[in-house]
Length: 446
Image (cartoon, rainbow, N blue to C red; front, side, top):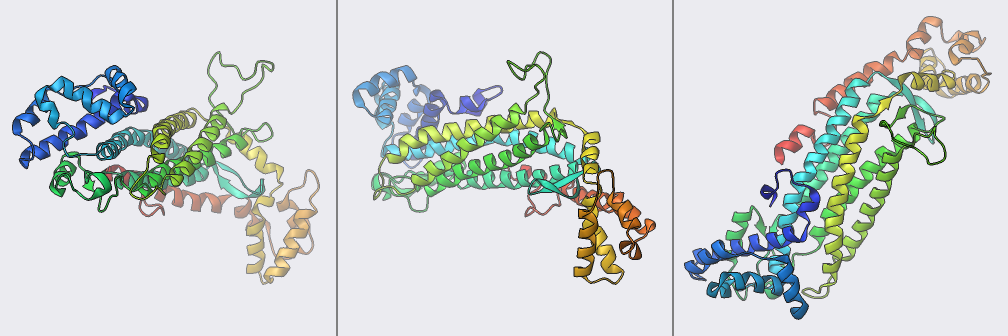
């Protein structure tokens, strides 16, 4: 349980020790419910509660003979309890405890994961606020398109991470399932009331209709939500990698004293965190494919899903936890080069504002086609050292529709700053368009 750790790490929550502890927590909750319903003696529950313990080493020893980890676990606990140990695992099949315990592990691990989301969202909020007026070149197809701001970029990523967090939350909620309906799910060995009481103890709800296992579409959704977390991380990291290229140089990852970028080239400062996280995202996506393969089991169940889940659940949660934490550190230590952003915009000689010039000419009476053709000609005829603003004023045809006064607010970026400021303000207040999934609302639900 998380409470056993002063500062829980995600790896702790997926250790063998924790896995068996979750199994034991479920078994004890079942025994408590059974005793309250007089299915087992009250003394048996008291003995189980006070004496139940396990040893991973001993479980491994027993499993060498049984070739069955749950039987080995139950046998180890029972031998520590004494005569009342015969009521351990009473009326249950292995998947009852395994599936419910996995739900318990997921629920507990998610609490740690959401603290990582907090850090990423806080870092993005800070960057969005600080750099909301830091104009930079927006790019489409890798080419300069229109002016944006670095803060506006970060606000967009912030909204994506809020949506991503909400997806993970929904997936966790639909994994809070207790399944104690026995072999093939027909409650042949104990009544549904046990399942209901255990659900109340754990904060879970009973599966509506199980086979011998909780249907694996739930698990696939959980892993998919972590894969989507990887996708959000990668999209941001790809942006960070592009902006760090030598020819762009608009941001730089933190570079600590004594750090080396290359064994051969002393000058190197590489985007290693963003590259590392791009790789992690690939693994998270790959695990989603494996989770989808687990959905189609034979009849009431087989165990083809088991070996897969023993890898993909610990790995996906640990990787997502690591990736979010490392991303937060990247963002917190990021150097934003506003001067370089301005110089890069200037390379385009003002064409970043061509769409607004187009609209200004339309307002002066030109058709859209005529205005487009005129602005395009001036843009394409620019020589080194020219600026679109100066050439428009010097061009005999174009100057009939624009003046120095009309172009000033366009090329100053005034309109971008004004509208960007308003939009980012809404996002930072939690009113952005993300189905209401602001950082505050998500925290409140969790």
